[in-house]
Image 1 (cartoon, rainbow, N blue to C red):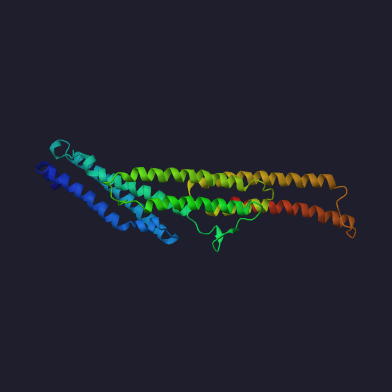
Image 2 (image 1 turned 60 degrees about the vertical axis):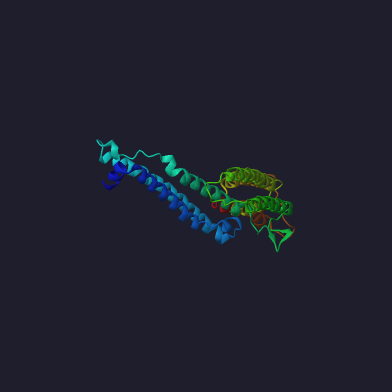
Length: 295
């Protein structure tokens, strides 16, 4: 009844109070968000920043929901007293809150980009020639990852050099600057997925393919890159089928005269030879299961 009374007698004061609540929510949330932790990220601070951003988003969304829930409750409680209903201009109350929530969502994308692209573990001791990717294309893949990281660092540096407060929602310059960043990240995602596809070219060994897949499983953080890694799971099944067909072909061609050493007994040696073929298939299957259970 008190809210209805103030709405009836002093609607402009109640509207002003609601706007002040919005401003106070923004002010308190801003104290929780550290731009330096977001832009100059490390693995600990970036996760704490993401928590703060998600909580700020939730706070803004819940405040707006609470307003509409209260307005609906007043209409329901006083259906015959329209003068008590909240008919404020919601845009004037929530314009900055909505802008702040969107700004937090934008910064959350920056954090996700930091986790995906700004990694320092592609090489050992800072030497770009030393790679944890093995095989013929190991160094090439590592160089591609480092190049992607460097391009992302350039975009982060551009954000760091902005001459205004990113969290000040009254400034509209952010929209253009963030769109540049966002489009650049999309390009980097395309480069990353192309590099993943290229890293599997020429891989014809199940152990090597599983090794490459597991590395990218650990590196994939963004949804588009995760989907690309998941699609590569089908390549493992095709490779397994190829291995099984090769084992079957070898067995069919040599089962009447297995390739035995001179000192191996005929029947026991033949049994060992067949067992070794079966073990190869079982090993490939165990590698495939180990890789797919992590997806």
